Length: 380
Image 1 (cartoon, one colour):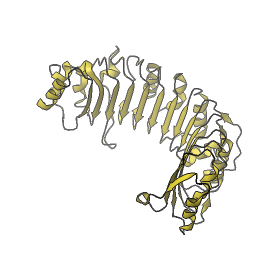
Image 2 (cartoon, one colour):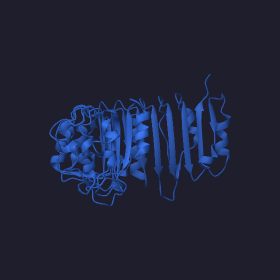
Image 3 (cartoon, rainbow, N blue to C red):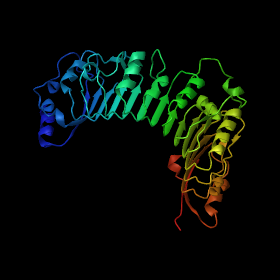
Image 4 (cartoon, rainbow, N blue to C red):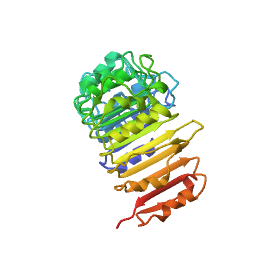
């Protein structure tokens, strides 16, 4: 306590950034969080507040932080993902029917639960991150209604009776959408794309489809009934086999940044991925591929010309991509390649050091592994 008060006094009128761990607070009152404390007397200076390991028995200690007139970033972070989710019934931000944080820009909720969203509009909220949360259908709807200015939405393993993605159309300003670890069909994912015409960046990780309404992933033949065109997307990040499969239905004419991550890739999935890259090769400036093949036969990776590519990142396992191929990308400024297992003879690597005229400065940072090589274009 004396140390905290000394820091507050010495900070003058500077903004405060707090991180509090309540794991050992149990149910008693925490002196530093009481109205008479020096900290709470200066609460208008608080810009960021991180609460770690709160419990239903001590969450009430936060009641005196509100209203937080100048709070910009608020995060609830839980260490254990195996305990019961933290109920937000006692959090004034959700329960009081008046504006509690008029300047709140970022809200992060980890391992929390709520049936109703904020009781008052969070008109300044730009980013909402929810990880391993349990939310009712009404809670999802409340979040969408009370956060009209949201530009970035991150859902990681959020559980609810109704999938929240059908509600994103209520967010007219949404520009970034990250979906990680979800259980819904590819068709529902495509519906989400239709309802988000202003998206600039889309990222989705593991998607498990239990609908059994489509051909198994290893039997994909590339035929679909329709194509979804997304004119506004600039950046796409796909992190699963199911997501790679969905690319055969999507056209993104303005795509400039593409990140693809896939394990156990082979056959039809690799063809879908390469076809998608070829369809968008003219505008691509950034390409990152992290691929793993578990087949005993080495898979050959052959990329198109990618005439506008600026940055190339390749990390492959049991996949053949010779470093020499990067030099055909005339606009390339830098590259990073990691191959495992490494090329069987060093001649394949040494070849790229003898390019004439010398256009790249190339190095092998062995501290990062024996199969790593990186380079950048030499300025004329």
